[in-house]
Length: 269
Image 1 (cartoon, helix red, strand yellow):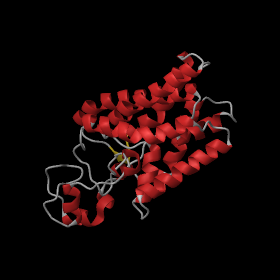
Image 2 (cartoon, helix red, strand yellow):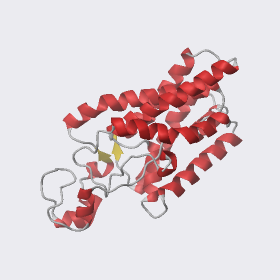
Image 3 (tube, helix red, strand yellow):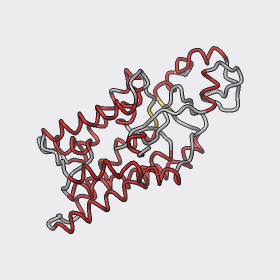
């Protein structure tokens, strides 16, 4: 799972500076009234406060990349689970929970995502199409992949699956983030908390350490795969994101819509 950091655009900086000619967050190209500059998210309609949806043609242009990216993420995480050499922190938690209830790890991933999404309400994070699809597609794909993969009963097969999962995760996350149709539920919690004071690095570290610790105590797999994921995912995602990023859709407002981008601790910078 990736996280995000907040990077204001030039339009966002001009809006915060109070320039009357700053682009309107919902209707690009129109002037943004000063009253809206002063109120930020409060100037949105009730629907716009909850949901961040770009124009229809932008959704159609970006949606295929989003879906392909999320499917690749599901394939990558499914391979890592089947390799049984260690998982990323959130999947350690998902596996630990799945071991104690009659539910697959993929379904647990979906359930945890929905629960985490409830935390967006007090943080006033806006839900995007990518947020909803992230919650559903990755977990379901993981289950499908694990059903067709053979048991990793040799070290060679284990390492083949783990390496394949680490490799596939890069383009998957790069396509998903690059579509810029909304952060995943876990990303939104991190950016929402970080916008209220703590650094994104601190928030990400604390949340993922908590997920890792609870998952390990519940029996989730922590091992060499966990370490390799932490070390390689940043550079891998950065490489693909530079090639897959479509940029912000029209209507993006950095004051209320966090930019989804690998955290510096992941990106190795």
